[in-house]
Length: 218
Image (cartoon, rainbow, N blue to C red; front, side, top):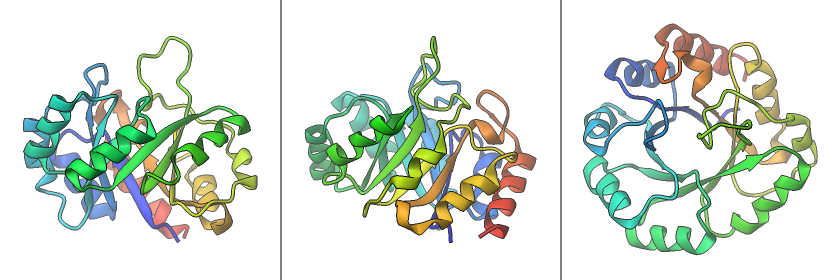
């Protein structure tokens, strides 16, 4: 069973509504100027208000205190996702200040990168495993590339994990199968570029199709 289906990089009412109606449990809003999915806190606030029962996630990359304060006070997210080089102490400080659960994204290429999990397991509420960006990319995520998911076969952990990176309709069944292997800690999926017609442009038909496929496969 999939515990979490997160559609990330939302920026329009239509895409938010499609994600909610399709059963997404988490909605991600990107606060990173270099991303084609970037929104301001003022843009995100009315979109987040449409979330109904889905949890809203504010995604940032090494955000400074003032920027984070603006995001949290304006958008009022249910969760924070940290997609930069944030330290465990930074995570603890943010959790104490805002009393919000935190997802920490980790960049993965090979099995050695999974050692990072132990660094953050005691201070976060969820981890997100994303592929390391390709050479030349300015984006820490949302690049439409995957890592070798077979390295997760030997993963055993108690913390909930979201699998991310290059998930689309062509490999959603394989991704769901990884979630169903309950011993590896992967409890959900995160999708962004795989439900777009162009970078930053969410495709309603793709959102509908991939959510329906994911939930029918569980």
